[in-house]
Length: 302
Image (cartoon, rainbow, N blue to C red; front, top):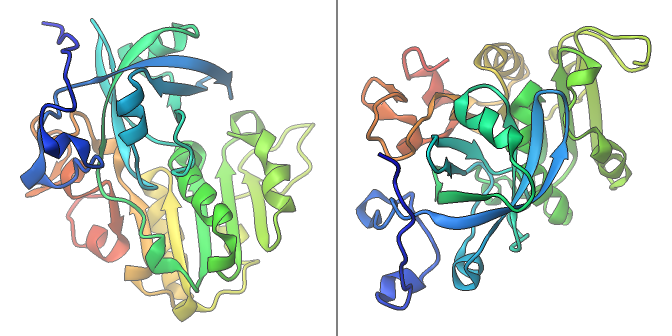
């Protein structure tokens, strides 16, 4: 049965006037209520990925909605289902959020057929976040592989907008082929920002590619790391975590200074479907962001 949108007056309860914080289980309330939202713009990134700009329709809900880098929302397409998607936009931007969606299943295929003006439902935000505040005063490594640049984009914006709070910032991005690069229209912009060092690598070059070819760990060889003054955020396929985090660990960076996102395991966002559980841990409730020490102590997490 398709869940319908239910009207809700936010002035009915004082709790609903507070900023959204669905990550606290003791305060979970009305999480089945979807914000009626509209797709206001669609950007074709690659053959498989599109960037959707989505705006909550209700003015009061839109003003109250906020999130932290690393959190996600549940996107509902009435009649087809819903999916968890990491938020790819800046936390400081309040007019709409951006969601990078790969065409990979029923719901995502329907979304890829949507046009501007289509209505969807949003629930959330859910999940833990990257502790950007804790990282202030340190060097920052922002490392992404493939689709991992989508969840990494929010902390990139956060760090750039608060650039004076950090030492050196390195953005390292790798993917299989040049045609699979995401957000390549922003690379020049990021490179122009003082002390932002962006490096991009592909595993298989083509006739148009003039950059480096190889694995993303090759880029790390070119970064001078001060291990006790460096934090790392890594987003990408789980196999990448092992190689990148092992490299960083060999450089002396403590495991509790590396943060990864396990959002690919999630399904319902509320710990009810049990699809994301790793032992007794539910990644949608305890994650998706974990420090690497925690991940290594979760059997079969990666």
